[in-house]
Length: 112
Length: 119
Image (tube, rainbow over all chains, first blue to last red; front, side):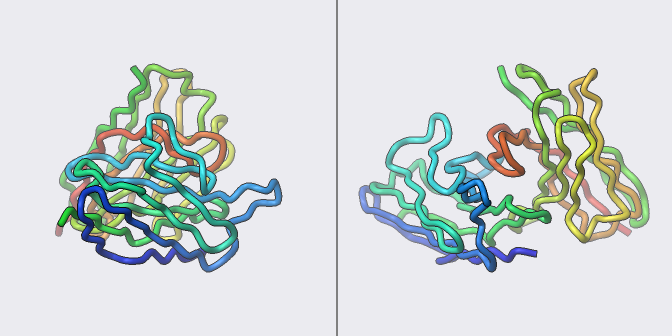
């Protein structure tokens, strides 16, 4: 099983400031087709999860461009260049290269 | 409107069974792979099971293998999760999610259905 390790577990951020979340996998997520089978999801309070980033760096439909994903292989980063109040919630990384698919433990972003 | 609606969650005794359903609308269900994902109270997300569009490729997380069965009826635009030999640790909100292109990229999620397993 591929283990996903996120950091930090909690992230207090002042509105307008940047934020960064890291995720490391225990094995490379690079498929032989050249794509990283890695996603970022956000679960806002009281809501179902929503897709933010897929294949490591592609923004999902409707996701603001202040969100960006980067990385390859085993190390990935989600960046928010200017945090807004609506960005609060728990952020999860997930690998879908190999079953069982696995999530990170989550990063709770809160507004200072 | 693209939508997934889960149903079938309930309070059940340890060792009991439940069948969850997920009804899709607003898109061509038969062309999409699907996942079940669960979330125990106050905990993170846990992937449970995957099924491809034709229903002939299926994966499970280790903790549910031999107890849960995923299936689909493309004619009824429906996804199912048959849950047997339920344990307290299966207590969770269960989400169905549409999969796009590979096992991840879950771009549409339902609101979830709650399963509570109690002795």
